[in-house]
Length: 179
Image (cartoon, rainbow, N blue to C red; front, side, top):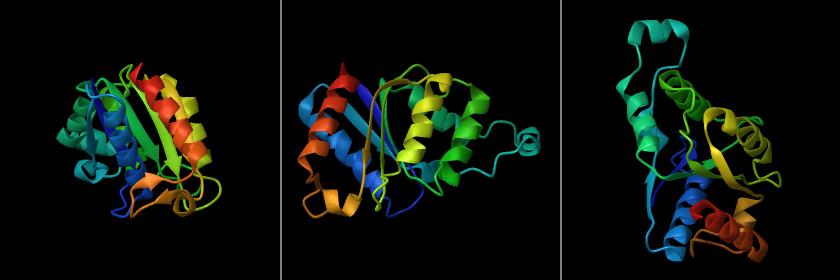
């Protein structure tokens, strides 16, 4: 089973990338038959989507490359960063371009959606939005987890969740993802 993992953030210091990478490592420890590829959405940076740009550019190769990464996977782990209660502009733009290739961007893939933030909300607003809309775009949601107060619940030096309840919930979500 091949899992594609990424943070829906373009920050080079993204705690969501830290979380999604950690989740991928935990899944590999649970199941030796799983490979996890963590990608960086900065590698798929595109001009701001508009119908005018689409008419001018068509569907850019980077959008196809991102879409094909999803297509080649057997499942997804995405960790959503939250900007002002919603998706980051970088993720939303990439998603918009990919959705013009095919509305079902997630292509029926089993998916685990995560989110985190430094604050107590844990980016739960964007996670809820993603969870609500994802089935329309072809995701088969197997689990979600918001990690509040990231720096209180994750030890970056040891690279692990320190909150036992969150660790258990992630473990259960990873099992549900793998089936």
